[in-house]
Image (cartoon, rainbow, N blue to C red; front, side, top):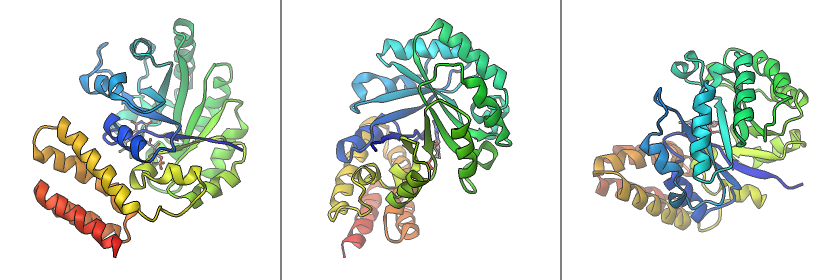
Length: 316
Ligand SMILES: Cc1cc2nc3c(=O)[nH]c(=O)nc-3n(C[C@H](O)[C@H](O)[C@H](O)COP(=O)(O)O)c2cc1C
């Protein structure tokens, strides 16, 4: 059985530069979701979102924009904008867990307002021909929220629903709830994609075995922590390539160069690259030490020395 691998977005990490670098060096991902667009209370797309979606900036084969809103006008405005750029699909974020967002009835905070979701989908599909897909958690407070919502979604035309089976209030803590995920599969005729904690080929195999009807899998943090992961899953091979340090070095240097061209001043570049190492370090035999080396660096020269030390440590 064939399957589709999606890159699940991380705001602040998986921008077009990261996506381009991952796709160039590793591949294995069939489609990338862009991090969400949020409007500032008026119909206006911020420059950083514009840059992230401009076709000339994006070298990946298939990119899907995402919006986070609870307002049909905003959804339609963003749909029109992304259609002008040539995109055919807009993904609706019903998963963001942060309490500031959820309290405002956005992201996972919207899941319990099922009529609002129903109304928005009715209005949007009446006024736009954009393909709609959804990304959601099980709920904010409890997983009745998704189980109550799914029957209402049956009448809507939705391409797929990516489910990250945690509650919003859990943030990223605790386990994913695979039993509730199964209940979601049983409650809907829509195509469901699984997302959450896939960080190895072994984990992927286990999940695929447990959910044989799922054909679509979304990888988030796992791809940043191990950019080889999607390709390894596609090849059903749980070993990194022998020359992984060389490949990782080339990828790293390219990513660095992309941010060097874009960001003003060494301080910003350093912070940006250090934030990636919270994830990259997990590829190394001693993640804690690898991350600590990088965090200590106070300038670019020291940073590059630390990267060299981390990589050399793996070559011995
Ligand atoms: C820092 C951060 C930013 C995120 N930004 C987004 C986002 O913009 N849109 C979205 O749908 N999910 C976002 N997510 C959630 C991830 O896409 C994904 O659903 C979640 O991390 C679980 O999958 P994983 O265990 O494979 O990472 C974000 C997660 C993190 C940690």
